[in-house]
Structure formats: structure tokens, C-alpha cells
Length: 267
Image (tube, rainbow, N blue to C red; front, side, top):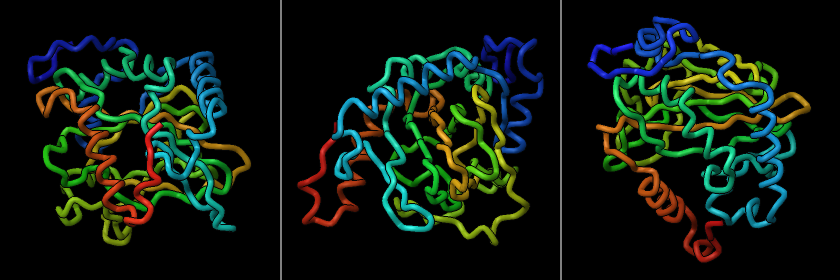
């Protein structure tokens, strides 16, 4: 398959819909079912459990890698995210380079893709949802081509806080102040109705950095785990993975009260 940009994609057209790229550019998202097998997803889930259990520091509140969400009823902090995850997990690292993902992303780009960041989101029972936002942020050199691939480890459903997107709203561009801060969006100011990215384990969803999205609390009794992989087009800054995390950690430190900064570490 050759894209309109002349890039020769390796995408197997018998496995993926022929209008994949058109759908993505029109709607700001696309779902591709059954990309990974049940066995492969279970291997990733087992690796995640093993990594988290391996060292207490990984779930320390002062670890720059770890993030937490309050319980929607009690306010108790729940361990929610490892960011990044690929350097801790050979299985996750392999997924991030898997041609089944890269072939789709590179077809959307019409060129090579570079891994920009990756994170394991656990979303345990009771965890609050994510406010409506766009992933793009006005940092120097932050790629406009940034997109996120979500590999569902558990089902993404209405009851467990599956990701919801606003189709077509990516075409409005960035909807917040370009001040280098993370901004939440007022859902009432966004056109149209949100759409749940309903996924089975092994499915992937892809959405643009400019696609407004959010998630509700996990009201189920099980986690809603997903492996979130973000990429940029090679022509849009090349390999920025290490540089991104350096900048990201500096950003976290600047936002941390000065008396607490000395406690921060990365493991």
C-alpha cells in the first residue's frame, strides 16, 4: 500500500479496513480490533503484575515514574500509572516496537513513526476518571503529530471508565492557552457528543493529540488496565523519547512545592 505522501506502507490490507487513514484524519480516532491475541495480552498483564510487585519504590508517591488517582468516594490515593513502563518490561518494550502497531501508525503518518512516550494505566476499582483534555501541550518542540495508541489489557466499557473521545473535534486545533501548562476543557464548550472507545482485550484505539477525551470513574470491581503508547512522525522531531522524559521530569519538579522537591526520585 502506498500512501498519498508516497510512503510505502507495510499494512496488510486484508486485515485492516482500506479507509483506515481517512477515518482517522476525519474523526481524530480509529479502532482496530483483535490486533493482539489473548495469550499476548495475558503475557503483558502478567509482566505488569510482576514488575509492580518487584520493588516497593516503584509505587512510592515520590517516584517520578508513579502517579496516583483519588478514590471517587473515599479520596484515598490509589496507585494508577507507571510512566514510562517499557524500560521495566521486555514484553512492553516489544509491544512498543511491534510492527502490527507501527504499520498502522506509519500508514496514518505516511512516514516512519518514533516512540515518544509510553505508560501503563491500571485504573483500579474506585479510581476517579480523567478530566476532559487534549494531549498536546505547548512545550518547545512538542510534536504536532503526537498520537496515542491504546492497547486494551482489560475491556474498556462504560462501567469501568473507558476512554471517551469527541469525534472530529481535533480539526479545531488546540483549545487551551499556549502557556506550557496542562489544561482541562469544559465539556459543555465542545461540539458534539462523546463516543466511548469500547475495546476488548487485544484491540487498539488510536487518537490524535488534539482529540478531546476523558474518562469516568471506574465503578466496577476490577481494574481497567491499558498500555498507552504515544508516537510522533519521524519528520516532526525524530527520536524525542529521552528528551521528552527529561523535560517531563523537570516539569513535575517545577510544579512540586520546593520543600518536597528533594524527596523526588526516578526509579
